[in-house]
Image (cartoon, rainbow, N blue to C red):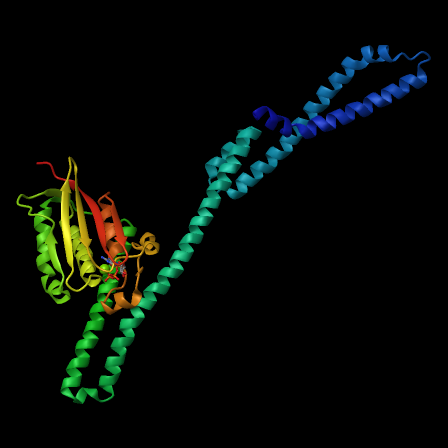
Length: 351
Ligand code: ATP
Ligand code: MG
């Protein structure tokens, strides 16, 4: 294969040197046949074959050397233009044609990847700005509506005034939550936010979250339970505050997207160095096509239902960032109409 490739690379030099040699040979043949009285072909071949072959080889090397020189000059010029690396600029002049070609290919591949990344980032940035303004617009217009109505005279009616002020305050809370969530995501993405790991009992933490959202679970008529009785502590090595946030997000989701009379079960499975935490519900479930995008910021399966419940689609994005900041993984399994299970791992603390 490499032999054929080499032949293709030399094909121009081979062709031209053959052509020039043949022309030279032809002239020689004609001049010999005209000026020599007795011309014998076999003598001619014997006499001059070596000379013609030597000429062919000499022509070949001269042409090939010149082609390589010109091509290399162009490749180096291209590398210098494409590359921003000044060190590279100084070294490439010493490379041979093969090495310079490989360098050029590598450079083009790197630039293509860079361009693709920049294009993706640009699309992402546009989408992100669109999503942020859309999410902020809704509560802002709600707040503005209530304030304008109050200014238009509703202030005088005490019951209307209190009701509208409470609704405006709710809108402000929603705005603050969105901004805080976005701020947290940005901190994780820019690497500012790092997790502060310490030893804690995950059994106790899950129970604390159950207690924290008890009122919400009663309102939704969904029971929050463990799959079995965990009588002994299970220690993990993680950021307790952030894991509380993860569990709260997942458990609140199971209430928001659960069914009346349903149940959400948490199970903890320990092996030698990890603890697997599973949050399973028997709620509305998620159909397959939504799963790959579920952890994207602002992504909602049913935007209307989610927004009605005060959601902006940032919760799972934060959850994923937190788990990944622990160098662990989170996954989801779901069946539409049947329920959803989120599973993630944490480092087991061996005492
Ligand atoms: P936020 O958490 O920011 O208040 P949200 O709950 O809409 O808003 P995520 O928690 O990121 O956003 O969830 C994204 C989407 O995934 C939700 O809108 C919902 O459609 C779907 N989803 C999440 N958890 C469940 C679940 N347990 N059952 C069914 N659907 C779910
Ligand atoms: Mg959520």
